[in-house]
Figure 1 (cartoon, rainbow, N blue to C red):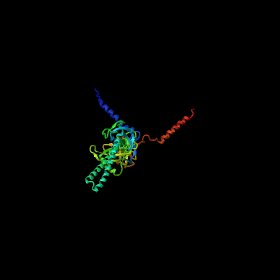
Figure 2 (cartoon, helix red, strand yellow; figure 1 turned 90 degrees about the horizontal axis):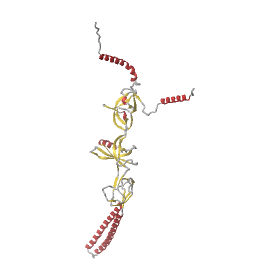
Figure 3 (tube, helix red, strand yellow; figure 1 turned 30 degrees about the horizontal axis):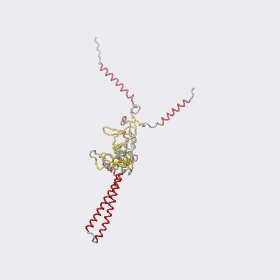
Figure 4 (tube, helix red, strand yellow; figure 1 turned 45 degrees about the vertical axis):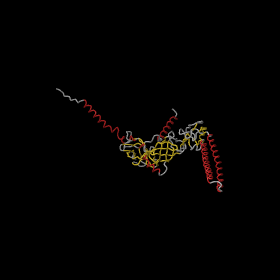
Length: 408
């Protein structure tokens, strides 16, 4: 007799075994993970986070830009007479006051010209005195009809011509005296000198359009010029009408302390090429931290309103908009959509979605699930708890007591 033996394929056998294993694992999973994970125990659930409270605080409304430092007054010193430079009184980079002597040009040719003009003036005055005396004498003779009227008019015209000549000579004397004064070149304003381009013995020429002798820039007070987009024009006009607007400038360097000034100029036209409006702030610059030609970061403060603000790190972004996680009294997280008006120095101004005093998550949002519990942690560097300190102290006392016991 033949015995029929029915064999299952190998693939079916493997599939049946895997189904049995899977069923066994499913029955034991709740026992291993269990309720501890749901309650926020070591199995997960309570996300560790750092929190803070939304609060009303002053957050300035500012416009930031990059500006250039410009002197309010600057002058390029040039000679007004031609001559030999006799003396250079100043040094490069020296602070000068208005009226200080800068250069001296050889005055001898101009002094001689002044003496010659004064001599001509004296000669013309003597001739004028003689002519006036003659006019008086001929006037009496004309009354007695001893001199004709034509002769008297001729003498009178000669006297008037001498008066005009005296006036011209006085003008020449004044001009010669002015040329002599131009030999001493003085500072027209207070400021700091730049590079000096001449030396003693050089011939300087009057009104030379080339390189100036020296340039003087006023450093205190000083301008900072900057541009803002044209859409800020309405806000600038509105806030400027209420009072003076403050401007802060941080020059490049290690010291980031800002220089404080005020907005003093608002241009009357918008640059059509760039769409920007030109503004200028005036700064005392008593410490000379601002230097002509320097670029600096400008912050124009329009107002200082008190608003509801939270740290910017609390803001999260999604496809539906911006939101924050709010920690409710039961220590669970709530996803809350918010509307942000602006941000300034790490603070985000909230216009809708939060109220003052609510607790928001500022760190650890990646592990937070809406509706799940959170574990509020202390920030790094916070002082240890008293219990920890007490326990540590007890352990130290116990160890010291054990060391003090004599060995048997």
